[in-house]
Image (cartoon, one colour):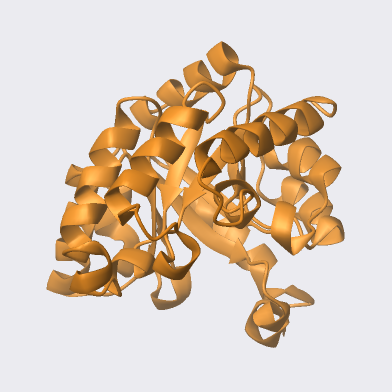
Length: 265
């Protein structure tokens, strides 16, 4: 088991939790007197004993208006550093390019512990990530959005394309650092994919605000040693709906999700 997944396993066992907390700040949903930096810091502090991992989505930082939240990349790097003191950090960046572009994108793993990648351009587009054996690489497979069927469900050799993606991910897992992104909004596909993907750990978004299947997320999303993550973002960090004590509300929501998921572990 690679360094990333070894640390993740330790976090899951120590905290008795498979909860991954998404850190996607929207300034309009944050109290006026709280900066994005402060918001993230307070959310992290409030959930640090529950979160087995944190997952900031790069888009929410790249688009930050300097007036609203400061330099987006500075805020992202500070958030990754702060979260990393408490749990592994997965950068949700969905990268996937070729040549020098891919190698530069892979430098994000100098900062984060893991990253999400898009396999559409093939192995050479992911090789700079895959070869970093101590870092986690979560390959998009069956995503939560309704439009995922447009391409991911296309029949290829008698099976949906996402099954072939899972098989490729198994093939690419030469360093033991590959996982899959499989949405909890597709419980039947999850059951099928667990057979196809063997013992790969999954990052499972889609519970909480998107109404995904918690039981399927745990049953199929974790590997034979119990490693896997169930992510919730809006259902945790905005559970306070702009209240002054949003961090307390986030902690309560994270604890509630932890308890709910643990019924199926």
